[in-house]
Structure formats: structure tokens, C-alpha cells
Image 1 (spheres, rainbow, N blue to C red):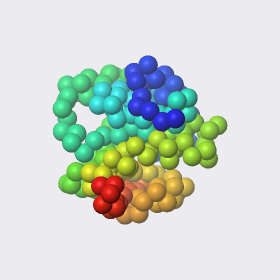
Image 2: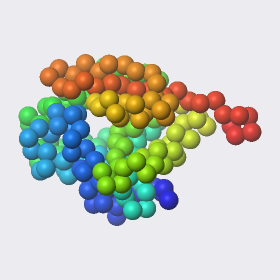
Image 3: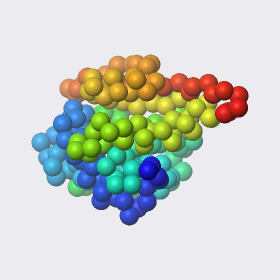
Amino acid sequence: MVRRASSADRSGVVASVVAAFAHDPAWAFMLGAEYEQLAPLFAGALFDLRIASENVWVTDDLAAVSMWDPPDNGDDMPGYAASIWSRYRTAAGESTFERLTLYNHALDAVSPAESYWYLGVLATHPKRQREGLASAVLEPVLSDADKRGLPCCLETSTASNRRFYEHRGFTQVTDVVLPDGPQTWWLRRGARVLPTSEA
């Protein structure tokens, strides 16, 4: 069963995300040699940012999670987000935070001006992969996007993930220019036209 996450799910979600991204090139770039120390802090910050707007979806056992930014995300709580990143910056150190800033600037350069759902995190614990869990936690927002006629966007730095997303409609690809970082792609999925009875 897929449901919205609650704050009580934080530790379980963080554990699944940390395990899932252990060999991810983008996370390796952003976190460097201190992955084991920093990954739980980074995953926790990403969770905290999205849980307030109820845009974190999980399986009941927390083995899979998707975290989204909504299309109407106009920084309704800029102070809240700033406090989360301030805590992370203090814990991670300036050089690590600079790499995160560089990464985000590279994404800003390719992200469209249109409104869209942004998939910030999709993770399945390695022990539970290939069970359809990732597709399941994507479905609520993909369905909402189709009903509202909105695109969805994300980035990935692995070819296997790119293929996974392409099979789910993310077929519009833009290269992300990330100096000294891994090859990264920005992927866009246009809204699917629903039959009139479903619209």
C-alpha cells in the first residue's frame, strides 16, 4: 500500500534513501568521501523540506519513497527551508555545501519556466528493488499531474535510472552541465491526455 508519509516515518525513510543512493554518482559528487556521515543528514533535510507540504509518498514498510516539490511551490515557507539548509550547512561544512550549491545552479540552468512537479528523490531500498515499489510511489503524483495537465521533471546521473524513467514517460532529455561532476540528465514527462470520462 502507498500512502503519504508522516513525520514519524523520518528515520525509516532516511535509512532507505541512504541505502539506495550509496553508489549514486550525483550523491558521491555532493557528499564526497564523507558519504556515510553526511548522507543521513542530507536525506533528512530533503525529507524535512517536503514533509511539511505533504509531498512525500511511501510504501507501508518505508522500503520505497518519492519526494516531490509541487508546481505551485513558491517558497511559501522560505524561513523554514532556510533553517533546514542552515543546519545542514553547519554540519556538512562549507566545501560540501558549495558542491550542493553548484549542483543546484546547474539544475536551475536547465529547469523550465513553466509550472511542473519536480521529483527530488525516488528511492527503493536495495533489498526490495525490482518489486514495482518505485513505480507505485510515483503513481499518485503522476496521476495528479495528468489530471491537472502538468509536466513532471527530475534529474538523474545514471544510465539505468534514465532508462527506468524513460519507460515511465520521461522522454524529453536535456544535458546538465556540471563542472567536475558526473554526467547528468534533466528529464521531462509531459502530461498524458486522459479520456474525457477520466478528466
